[in-house]
Length: 405
Image (cartoon, rainbow, N blue to C red; front, side, top):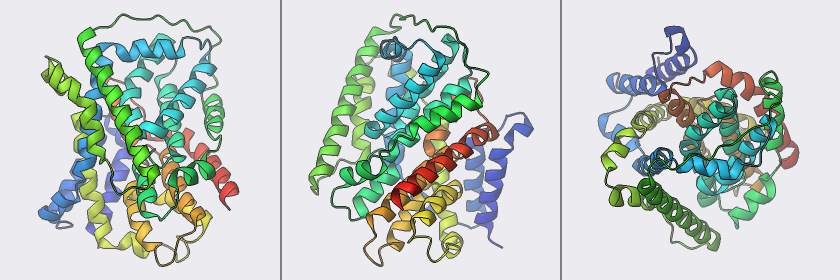
């Protein structure tokens, strides 16, 4: 009997079949219930549960949520989207533009940041151009997941590999080995899956006025600060110095102009995605309880951490159970018995990241997108995500295997 594993299984089943109860259960509520269950059954103690929560990640997300809410409420996000996409005249072009823009931006801003900022924009574009919200939400999810693969700062698990994997030049390693044109595969899969929804009408873009100029100024300043901090973080990492900027500093400078310089900060704070912060805190507790059982580690095949195919497939599959960041955190010390080959580290990065294309629980950015959409009345189901994401994941893994093997 292994209560944490059974509880995790129950959480995953409830997430997959929550539509059977009318969609009343939210993902954050299910995961919170799982975290409370492992606490009540003794799977983890209160002190260890508190230590399991990554407060730096929560602080980072809080600041990004504040900035994202300010960008959306001020009208700056909608206005910027028209300027960026104003020349796109077809539904096919719009989906491709979302994939490419999301992929390129996630290499700098981290995929979770793009998930926060991009979700309200995708919903607005879907309404304006009479496209299914699921199409653009999936394009956003796939774009930022695939784009983040090729950057050591594209997502948290890549950052762990860059810092602890012993790579001489992480930026060259990631970009040189993983910068593949797999975003075009995502466009092809989406074009096939939504073939009846791509209408042939020309897209018309209306540039809306700013809803709140003062908030727009504060949000613009916050975005500039965050970009500058991210570039500084990249420069420090590329220089190989011991001085590093923690994640929370990036979001702190991003939300500072909004929280310190805008008069209606309470309205902004009330509107941010608090349930997703609860989700992450609960997820850390639940995953820690499962890891502490040792059951996942004991079932890893002996050569799973030595071969490129094993790392690609294992990373994609095991990430569905315990999330990609904890998986990488566990795998790295297990790979340190000998100097890991750069190809093995890149396979671990690619497999654990592309896991986000398989199911909506495969990446934190997916959960952010789904919950932000649900808060706005749009539902993206587990099985809809899987139906499109599974073939795309298989194609992605095949391309990375051919390139890294």
